Amino acid sequence: MAKGPVKVRLYRFQNRLKDKCAGLGAGLASIDPKAMAEAEAALQKMSEDYPDWVSGLLMKMQEQHGRCVDTPENRKDLFEVINHIAHDMKGQGGTFGYPLITTFSDSLYGVTEMKTGIEDNHVELVKAHIDAMRAVIRGRVSGDGGDIGAQLTESLNKAIEKHVGAGQEQN
Amino acid sequence: MSEYDLERVTVLLAEDSQFIRSLLINSLKILGVGKVIAVEDGGQAIEFLQLVKEDPMKAQCQKVDILLSNWDMSPVDGMMFLRWVRRHKLSPDRYVPFIMITGYTEPKRIIEAREMGVTEMLAKPFTISNIAERLKSIIERPRQFVHNASYFGPDRRRQAVPFEGENRRFLTEKSDSVEIVRG
Image (cartoon, rainbow over all chains, first blue to last red; front, side, top):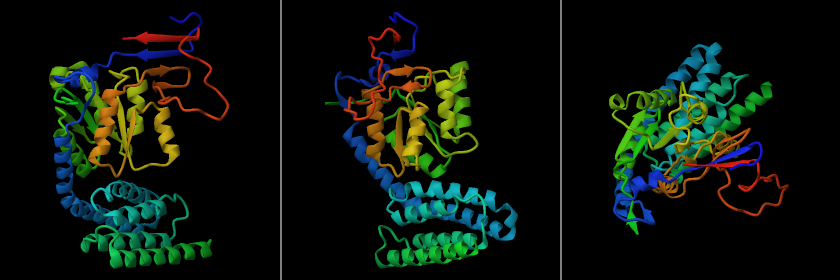
C-alpha cells in the first residue's frame, strides 16, 4: 500500500490466460511442435497463391498510375494510395520466396512517400517499379532471381537514377 | 514438457489485407487457437469488443484473450485501435495483450507503439515461429501494467540490463508513491 500521494500504480494480475491454456500438465509448456510443422506446411501451400495476390495489387497500382497521368492535380492522393499498396506488399514477399517483390515494393514505398512536387518523372518511376514487379511475378522469379533478378534490379536502379536525376536537375 | 491447450483461447484479428488475413486465421487455427474472429480494420475490431461487452450471446464470445492487429489499415489503423483499447473509457479490457503486426520496423515506429502500450510487435515478413513465440511470451511471461502520469500499458522494462546513461528510474515498488494493485 502506498504511503504517500500515488505517482505510479503497478497492476499485477493472476495469469489467467496461462490457467486457461494449461491443459492437463502444469508448469512449463510450449506450442505443439507437430502443429508448428503443420502450420509451416500450410504457409508453404498458401505461398502458391502469393503471385496471384501480388498481381491483383499490381493491377490496382497500375490503375492509380493511369490516374496520375490523366489527372495530375490528384497526384498527391494517388501517390498515397500507391504508397499504402506498396507498404502492404513489401511485408510478405520474403515469407513467400519473393524477396525481390519486397525489395522493389520497399523502393516504391520510398518513392511515393513524397507529398509535394510530384513531377512526371516521379510518375514514370512508379511505372518502372510496377513493370519490374510484374516481370518478377510473370517470370515467377523467386529467391534473388539469379541473372534475371540482377538484370531487373539493375534496370530499375537505372530508371531511378534517370528519373530522380532528371527531377533534381529540374528543381 | 507439455503442450499448451489453446482450444479455449479467443483471438481477435484486425487485418485489412484479405490474403494476410486468411493466412493468419489459418496459421492460428492450426496452432490450436480455438476461436479466431477476423475483422477488416480497427473500427470493426472496436465494434466487436463493444458487442462482446454488451451482448456476449450475440457476439458468440465471452471474452477476447488476445488482440492481433495490423498497423497500417484504414479508416481506423492499428495505433488508433491500440489507443482505444488502452485508454478509452468504453474499452472492456484495458489490460488485454495486444500484438501489433507491421512492416514498419523503423525504431521510431517501434517506440511509438511501445509508448502507446503495445504488448508485442510482429514484424512482416513473419514466420510461424515468430507467431508462436509471441503467443508463448504472452501466455508465459505477462508483464505487470504500469500507470503513471505519462504512460499506461505493460511494463516497458523487460529485463534488468545495466544502463550507462543518467538514472531516471527513481521509484521502486517500495517507494511511498508507488501503489501495487493485485487481482
